[in-house]
Length: 77
Image (cartoon, rainbow, N blue to C red; front, side, top):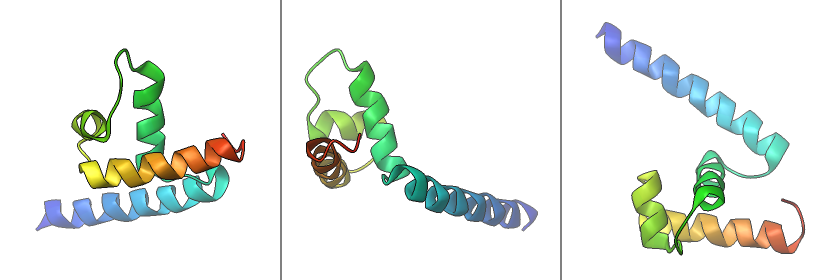
């Protein structure tokens, strides 16, 4: 039970961190992970490739990538 309670505290801390991160950078942690993968990519990155690199589902990576492209278009990044 002690481990579960510790995990709950880690989850709460991550949630608080992500909220603060989003306020500052206007992107989610998932989107930040995708940016890191894209920065270091040596091959064409599809939603499937991104999902394999981030352990996110292809649908999540596709939505996150689309959101990042919108930021790029507005010159937010």
